[in-house]
Image 1 (cartoon, each protein chain N blue to C red):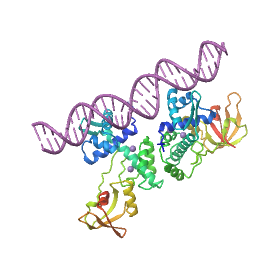
Image 2: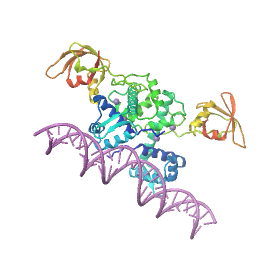
Image 3: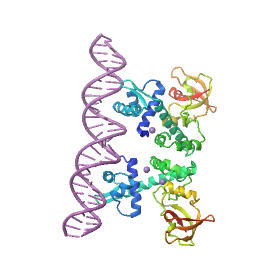
Length: 221
Length: 221
DNA sequence: ATAAAAATTTAGATTAGCCTAAATTTTTTA
DNA sequence: TAAAAAATTTAGGCTAATCTAAATTTTTAT
Ligand SMILES: [Mn+2]
Ligand SMILES: [Mn+2]
Ligand SMILES: [Mn+2]
Ligand SMILES: [Mn+2]
């Protein structure tokens, strides 16, 4: 049995590969990863070789990288940690939803499955994090989200806000000022052809939001 | 303003220096630190020079090392983190008191004063950790413990168990099996000359404990 | 007060993770 | 389909934190 503990850096690489391969469903390119991880492509090449040695990724020179089953499970487990800690920070320590991501980036790397299981129980087995992202279960199963961007909704539709695509602090604070939050019922009153902005109604008040916003708000129903 | 963020390693060195200088109140020796941190003396020399450059310790070649005011405050703040996390793990996540130290070793390095302040509030500003050690306040003040080893107590004395000197898992589990816990009232019935063992009474039951144990149990009153 | 022993520091390597610059491969474009 | 452009890898270095072995200083014991 080889020592199996990963460094924070290795874990962050796995998460990045997971997230990028999710979107495109093809091998992840070196440049793409370099941008995501804010490093240089040559650094990516080095690390990806190391991860391949550890059987966490399949790597073909010049062709990109994909997670193995083992690598995928590891990535998902870190995402589980991340999202559970975010729930803890918001539900128990009263942080705002725009304040927790960076802290969770640190906390996700704490090594102890017992800790995470107990945290999960303490939080009453939450299914979604404060931004509406699904929390994987301890076996690595993730709900595949049935949500879609508000931008796709037709005029007249009534739906529930279930998540955000962009969880930058700026966007989240913007939503706060307009009292737009997860669980709110939202109705599309009108769509503007020329700029794709929408007139919407939430809690009986109507206002207009830009395409930028409607693309990043996820709804269900 | 220089970048001030310390590595986990640097933080652990500061904690170790703090802990060793506490006991002896003199400059801490290289060998002593090497033993405490489970590294080689030459590694200590290297790191101590770096900490001196950062004004965290005063270091005189061949003479040992002492924390500066800045280094001391940093060490105390990490100890505060450590002990608050231990309280969280025991009080909220139902860990046993012998299970939390290693996890707290990881959690103590999470960087965010806001997180610690909120954790402190969430836990209702605890004054002591699960092993009876005082939790420093956010300004770096630590209660100086008025406790003493049970070994010093006279026959006939009634006192309260307030802490442990040794918080190894083995010792803590031993105490559990004898239902010896913080807050228990303990009476010294008899002291044996030849091996310094004690006959004591807790919760109306009497039993004998070795000198090894009485040295590591801290009492007050 | 020396010599021997112990403690400490210095010198020179190693590993992880990163970088720049140069070389190589793949993709695009004309 | 052959340049040209873009992407990727390789080569060679750097820093943090560690190590071993050798040199130096301090302490202890004769
Ligand atoms: Mn997040
Ligand atoms: Mn991370
Ligand atoms: Mn502890
Ligand atoms: Mn630590």
